[in-house]
Amino acid sequence: MALAQKGLSYAECEQRALSVTGAAFFLAASYMNHSCDSTVTVERQCGHTSKFIARKRLAPGDELTIDYIGSANLLPPSDTTDPEEALMERLLHRQQQVLSNYQFRCQCSLCESEFAAIEGLD
Ligand SMILES: [Zn+2]
Image (cartoon, rainbow, N blue to C red; front, side):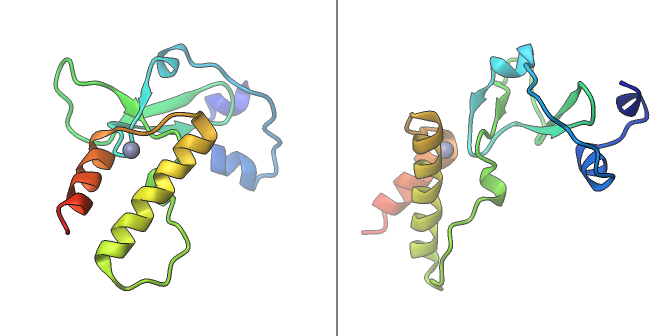
């Protein structure tokens, strides 16, 4: 597709009211597990490509994970000012999103560390 060759981002395509329909299958990404604190972020491109960008320094053998639910931008509606309560709300909201959309309980390092932190609060 010519648009992809021009390097337009997905957002730029949408701004130009270019319709992007259909689905894509990315073989490498299909092997990546979910993590709320993913090592890789996916940047959709206009056309037939996506970029996979490391979010942190990776060493050989490190697992490449992607965030299926967009955890970084996924905050539950809340009016709490209590940081411990806010932590619990974020964690439970992420857990609910993963469970309802992907039918598994997230046990990523972020979720497990936050569960441990909450258990240690008592
Ligand atoms: Zn998680």
